[in-house]
Length: 136
Figure 1 (cartoon, rainbow, N blue to C red):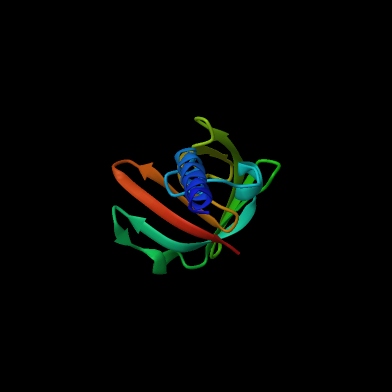
Figure 2: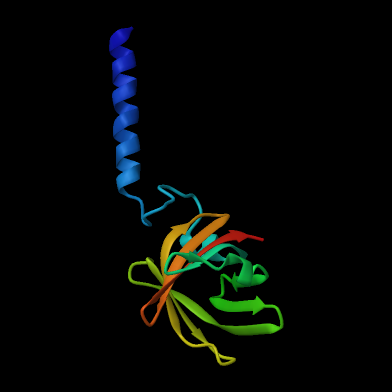
């Protein structure tokens, strides 16, 4: 009986270590049954927003972003809005946004992409903008 418990424990340890090391983004997920494109295709609202580590969440509480499976992108922030296109790049670790409506092109560096959670940062000059978004 003890040998089977040791074998099961060892198998679970190997499986957990294997799946954890295959994780695409630093903060997860380790394994997902949905494709990255399906997971990012959503309307997202800001849960947390920081610039160089300083919290500015209250300034963007009504900001949302929408990514579609057809690679369309849009955002709204009060009376401001814009549209564009998105595409994965750099082995799906980044999202490149190219826009119209006076929206600049930008690269988003993905940190977490789950069904209901999207974390990324982008650089604007020397400033690091970090966004934690949740599905709406």
